Amino acid sequence: MRTGIAVTVLSVLLLTGCSGGEPQQTPAKPVYDLPAREVRPDETALHLPPSTNGETEFSLIGLAAGLPSLTGSHAEFDAKGQFVRIRLVVTGKGLSGILFDTRRQQLLTDSGAVIEVDNQAMTIKRQPDKFELGRGVRVEFDLYFDAPKEAKPVVLRAFGGPTLTDMKNLAGTDIKLG
Image (cartoon, rainbow, N blue to C red; front, top):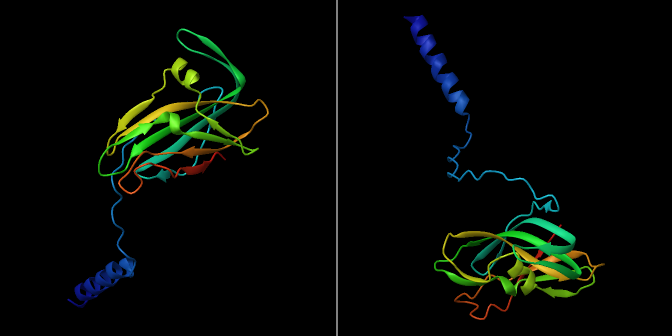
C-alpha cells in the first residue's frame, strides 16, 4: 500500500513539475499553404515585411532593373533609359472594397527622381490598370517604370486607394526596395 501511495505522489509531482508554471501556448492560427515559385531569371527576390497604405497591404516580392526592352504578345518596346519591374501582391484589408489604381504607384530613385508607371509598358505586358480590390482579396502583378539608365531604384511610393479617412488618397507609403 505504501508503495502505491508513493508511486501516486511521485506521479503527481512529476506531472505538475512538467507544467512548471509555463504559460499555455495558444494554438497557431491556421494559414494557407501557398506554393513557392521560382524567381524569374532577370529578377531578384525581395524578402520585405508587408507595408500598409490606407486599407491596402503591399508585399513587394521581386525586383528587376536594367531591362533594355520588353517583349509582349504583339510588340517589342525599347526603354528610353532602363525598365524597372516590381512584382507585388496587394491585399484588401478594409471592411469594404476600394478602387485600386496601378498607375498611381511611383518609383523613387537614388537621385530623388520620382518616376511614374510607364503606361505603354504596362499595356504591352498586359498588366492591370484599375480594379476593385475587395476585402480579403489578394492580387499579384507587375509594375513597370522607365527610369534613366544610371538610376538606381530605391523606393516604391505605394497608394492603396481612397478610404473613409482619406477620400482623395493623397498620402502614399514609401517602401524601401532593399
